[in-house]
Structure formats: structure tokens, C-alpha cells
Image (cartoon, rainbow, N blue to C red; front, top):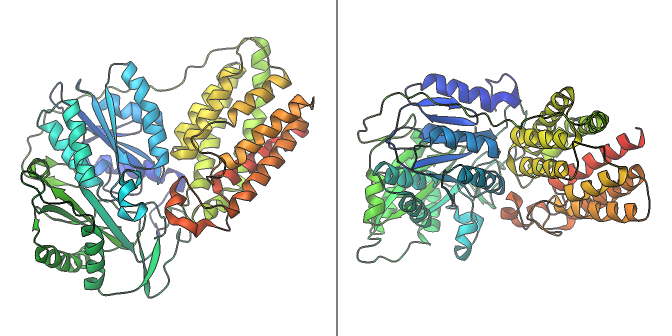
Amino acid sequence: MTYLVNDPKQFAADSLTGMVAANEDYLTEVHGGVTRATDSPQGEVAVIVGGGSGHYPAFAGWVGPGMAHGAVCGNIFASPSASQVESVVRASDHGGGAVLLFGNYAGDRLQFGAAQSPLGADGIDTRIVTISDDIASDTPQNWKDRRGIAGDLFVVKAACAAAAAGRDLDAVEAAANKANEATRSMGVAFTGCTLPGADEPLFTVPEGEYALGLGIHGEPGISSHKMDTAEGIATLLVERVLAEEPARTAGGYDGHVAVLVNGLGATKYEELFVLYGTVKKLLTEHGLTIVHPIVGEQVTSLDMAGVSLSLMYLDPDLEELWLAPGDSPAYKTGSVTAGQRREVVAHDEKVAIRAGSPESAAQAEELLPLLQALADMSSANEASLGKLDSIAGDGDHGQGMVLGSTAALKAAKQAVAAHAGTSTLFDVAGAAWSEGAGGTSGALWGAALRELGTMLSDDQAATEDRLGRAARRFAQLGEARPGDKTMVDATAPFADELTARLDAGDDLATAWAAAARAATKGAESTADMVARKGRARTHGTASLGHQDPGAVSFALLMSGLADRLANS
């Protein structure tokens, strides 16, 4: 467990601030993460890495000369918000465009993707490369749909070296894609990890066993095996990773490999060296040449005991990029001359608050208790939602809902104090929810509230029917479809029932109560589904018999709103 904690919900922020204080020659803290403390050549492509916190040294530990230009740092195991991504990219931009690198997770795709358009509109050409090295999470044919784990290091290093060599944006993006396609990883866990402030791990591994195919966000492995020797585990990992070895070709992959034996947080260096001894022996017997091996912690999972093996199959260009010098707090190779210390310009990403008409402002004040209800329901159900999420996910859903809803409520109160109308009220609340929570649910709830704002007006109050119709749009966001075992299995029946009741002439409170019951029924139906989206997808039938946490949280919050509407 984590012992040195102040406020558990501030753990990621406190840790980042302390890390920057300890590495001031490398890092400057900005909104959403860190950027290089030293200058880079004008016109150089900026490589931005990022994702949830809890994986040190990924990602902020890889920022420095020859390495990344900035890192966006979300809450524990949750993607950063789009505004945090924008902030770090703007602080790290040197006029050459930016390549954003992150593991292939839904929340990261949503949030980094949402930042791409506004950055491009301001002249910062931004490319996205999602890292997908984990062979346990999908088939070889669907390797692009796999999640990113410790192989992140290889992809980041290749892209950063390409940028430092002066390659243009297209070429840096191409180097990242080539490294990702050439990288394969597999890991095992001996224990689960524990979120800061929690008193039990997200999952447990039975005594005398280990879990194969772990995730780095506290997801359990995909299968359990009887505990073996280091030699036996090394043999299994090498066999699995070599199963996808590419063909050797003249001028292409020639049997040279970069190797990373990565500790997950509580498996220390002496043990890793024991494992690497067998890894080297097996790879050498296979006719491979190991180039600059790394043994240590590069992508951890808080206090998880476990280890992963990553290989990058090298061609001459990738080998050159892998060996290129780099200098950061946690990864160093060769000799790099740092630039001059630079002044970082802060970028304010706050949503402007404009006063609404007296009628709309009065209605905004009347609607504020609904946002209070969302925060109250989230707080009351934080523990149960987190426990449900830990079955086949990362266990942070309850905390994310609390962080998002309380941030939205705080922003909404400030908007009401500034006499904002209903449109601005929900726009401000949505931006704050996304910012406060991060992750997939933060992106969806934030976007939904902001979409609701676009359906309302700062110039006039909305009728009950208008509010109800706007709420239907609120429940129609996201990529998933009914049956995927996601929040949509609750939002879709909610929207359909709300519309039907309003069409039948019901008042808003009556229609909402019926829609909330439909959402609850939809959430209950997910217990019989196998996940086709999200992190639970990787674990097959592990979530059978358990409801989807996103669907449950939506139904709970809609039920809370129904009670508040009935009593208002």
C-alpha cells in the first residue's frame, strides 16, 4: 500500500510537484504536467508523452534533452483532460508541430483527440500515435487495438531521437509508428496494486500463483499460473514475445533487438537481474543480438509486484534512434548538451464566464442543486463504484466520478455567483468535470454537460420541455453501442424513455423518474454481457455477473436527479 499520503485525491498532484522540485534542472511544472526547463532549437518537433499517473518514471521522468519535450500527467490511472494536453503542448511548442504519444486506452484517445483540433486551429500541427505493444490484450491480427504497457519507452525514445536529429513532423511521426509496430511486450503480476488511501489492493493473486498478461492500471491478468522459478517465467515471457518475431530481411530487421526487463513497482533490481540472466541466454540461443539492454523500472503500476519483458525488433534506423543520446530524470544514455534555461509562458485554459439575462441567470441558480445532487450521489457511492470497477478494470471509477462532479459543482457555483445563464452554467461545469476527472468517464460527462449547454440559452430561461429535450442529447454521446457493456447501456434507455414520456405530455419530474428507472434496468442488464469496449474488454468473461461501473454510476446519478426534481 501507499504510506506517504496527504489527501489521496491530491496524491498525483503532490507527487508531481515534489518530483519537479527534485529535478529543477530538467523540468518546469505547467498546468496539466511538465515541460522541459531548458530550451530546444526553433522549429524542432515537440514530442509530448502522457497518460495517468502512478507509472513513474513514465511519463514525466522521460522529459529532457534528447527525450520528450513535455509530459501530460492525469490522475492516478486516469487520462489527463483535453485542456491539460493543450496546456503542455503549447508550453512545449517550438514551431515544428507536435507528436503526442500515449498508451492505447479509450480515455486517452478521447482526451488527447479532443485537444488536437484547437491546437491545429492555432497553427500547431499535432499528430497522434497510440502505443499498442501488449500482446496479451488482443490478437496479432488486431495488434493496433492492443493496449500500451512498458514498450512505451521504445516508442518514445525513437520519436524523441528523431526529433532531436532535426527530422520533420512527418518523419518523427513515422519513426514513432515504426517503433510501435516493431515492439512487443508481455508481463506477469505477483500481487495487485493499491490506490493511494485505499486499504486493499485492486486485485489479489492467490498464494503460490502468478497472473499472466497484467495491465499497468491495476487490471488483473488474463490467466493464472502456478508459481515458477525465475528461469521458468523468463522462458514463458521470451516464448510469448518471440512468437511474433518478424522475418529477417536484408536492410531491415536483422536479428538485433532492444530489450527492456521492467519492474512494476515492488519487484526490485536484484530479482530483475536474475530474470534478465535467463532472458539474455534464451535470446542469444535464438540467434539474436541484444543492443543496449535496460533492466529496471520504466513503466510501473504503483506498488504492484511484477515484471514485464519488452522487445523492439530493430532495423538499422531504429537501432540508430535507440542508441541516440538522451538525458532525463529517469532515463539517460550517451552525452547530451542541454540548452539554456527558458522562461515558460503559462496558458490559461479556463472557460470565460459571461453574465446571462436576469431570467436565464435566475434559472441557472435554480438548476445548481441538480449539480449538487450529482456530487452528492458520486460521493455516497465512491467506494462501491471503485470496487465494481476493480473486477475487470482499474478501480478508479468511483474516485473519478467524485473528482469530476465536485469540480463541476465548484465551477457552477462560481458561474452562478457571476450571474451566468444556463448555457454558460453547463459549459463551465462540463469543462471542469473533464478537467477534474480525466479518463473516459471524465471526457464523456464533461462533453455531455457542455453539449447540454449548447441546447440552452444565456438570453432566456428554458421551458421544462426544452430542458428535457436538451437532457436527451446529454445522454447520447460516446462511441459505444448498446450491448457493448458500457455507460451507453444505461444512457440509451434513459434517453428513449425520457423522450417517450415528454412526448406523452408528462412533466419533467415524472418523465425523468421513469427514464431513471429505465437507466437502472439497463445498467442491471450489463451483468449478463461480455465487455466489447473499454479496459474490461481485455479480460473476456471476467466481468460476467457484474454490472458495468459506468452504466451503474449513470443510473445512480439520474436516480439522484429524479429525487431532487420530485422534491423541488
